[in-house]
Image 1: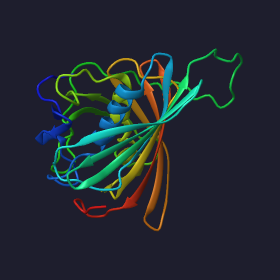
Image 2: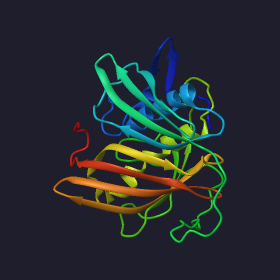
Image 3: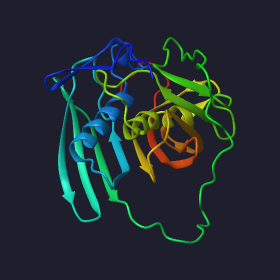
Image 4: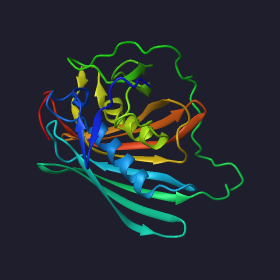
Length: 261
């Protein structure tokens, strides 16, 4: 991961975005994947604990925001013996722009036996060396992307991703934050078609059996359904050793690049 420039600089309680924090939908809009990453970071810092697994993160992306400083506040909702629930609210001077909800489950003894619906490891190994240059229209992804299948073609779409920059200052990107950032790519991967991306996601829900190991996170699109301009898509998420969880997104038709939610 490069340490050239983080997406945000911490200044007091505010996180000030750098130019490469922009969205592909508009040059003056914050990227939704980063809001999910900031929610995950704040939840992990405030409520993470050894032995507690971040098993679910839902990120609601219900309002676009210009490139303004961001604040994130968290609330502990429930703290039990085996489950902890916490929320995060992401705001700018214009108001609340996103929120996150996390479920943490305590590690325990793994049950014996085979599970009939167990997801197999895929046959794609993490790439080595630099990533190819990837462009989506006039936008270059500020993360490494290896596309393993045709864009929007029939069949499961597959990609490997890797973060290029820290999220905040020079902080290392934690495995949980890495998974939260990668999960946003479930929307373009599951909703793309051969002539481009016609849906923009309103949320995503990441579920994790374990945290990713290493820098690479792989995504495989395993489903899409849409009707009357509303879509849902799903992906399986992988690391080098096998599947780690799933991500489901909902999305709304957005035929013209740059239109707002």
